[in-house]
Image (cartoon, rainbow, N blue to C red):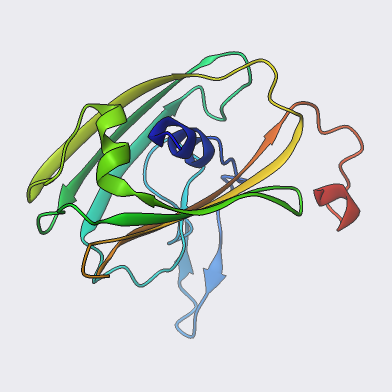
Length: 181
């Protein structure tokens, strides 16, 4: 499996970028969703507790956002690697089309990084990735859900991202259970 497939799947995830407003005990208003990945993208973290993650993602920008079939998707990402990532790191990847699981696999992270002109070990420090991906016109319309949970060779957590994207028209979308297929 190519890393570009993983990137397409993650980058293609589009969720509503509306504001999440929560009133706590002190009645203060918190704007924004703590799970949203910073930047112009539809990505979300899997969990709000990311203190032990090896990568701190600073920003991810997708152009266009949301991704569109038949266009070139440009992904720009910056972050900080807190400790070296060595051979043996892996990603647990799941991609669903509606309720149908298309991909459920474990991939070698270092092998896939070669598709973005990077090699392991990925050294501690600031990192920037830019990748252009041609999205085919033939992407079947519908809802795609992606989950990528990434681990070091020692099973330390690197990061976990999730995303949802609609390709094609959303005619008849009601927001109900059947409309979400």
